[in-house]
Image: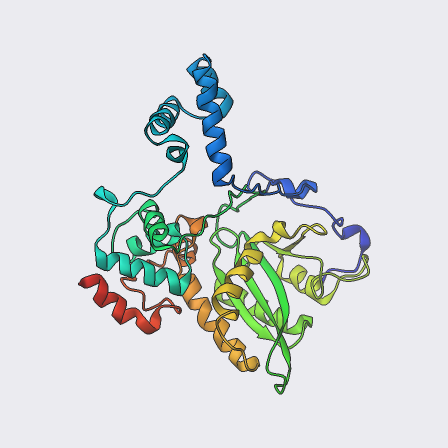
Length: 360
């Protein structure tokens, strides 16, 4: 039975359901911490030299370690390097040789994959290991990239407010993205994408290219996902159309449909996109791996592109936030059986060459 438009039965604007599995700072109106930039090489050298200067002035080792946040072993290592090479010895350097060296063909394979995908060292190490190509560490990849001039130092990221439900289908995230402009002669000339992501597994439940932001096509996508994956307990949206009505005391069609299905509607706070962060992170992945690499001529082309990517994303793309497992492994237990780069869109064209190189 449809829910009547009774303002007293509507949740408050910033209301959130509480519980141990859904408690995070953003629900209290907090802001994520501002990431701090990684210190420059010069700053690191000056800091280490200051620590050695304080130590040589007679300060206790324990006090120096406490003030400069380093271990005793690190402090002694800085002293030995400074005595051997001066201030140049206090700079970080990647030293080739020894047990960290990789075979030449594996180095060529790593560099090729890096240039075509621009994966970071941790992803490259995980992809090579899980696809049974070669077992290597991200430190080995970092040193190789530094020697070959393709290393890009990254800023230290401060993790923001995070939360995660305890089981699949406990919470879904839905969002609309767009407009994305197509060929000027196409009809329509632009499209929007709607996507649903499971909170626990990051599984992409559904994605479609839509000509407009109207509620009916969005509801059709939601209905298809419910038929395939079941009914979630909660569904999170932002406060845009078609999810929320302009008038607070009236339920829009989307909200009425959720009430009929028995799905609790959770809305993000205003200007807090990280509360719907699972689907927002997916948009960044889609932009980098599909939209920036393919030319979407018309609506049909856009639909084909994102549908093909959904299969790769769910069952073949390793996810760093899941311990380098696929969303499918966590959502329904589908095993990861890839032993090559053939399923990776950016590497499919040269997957055979990469396999021959790895086997050489």
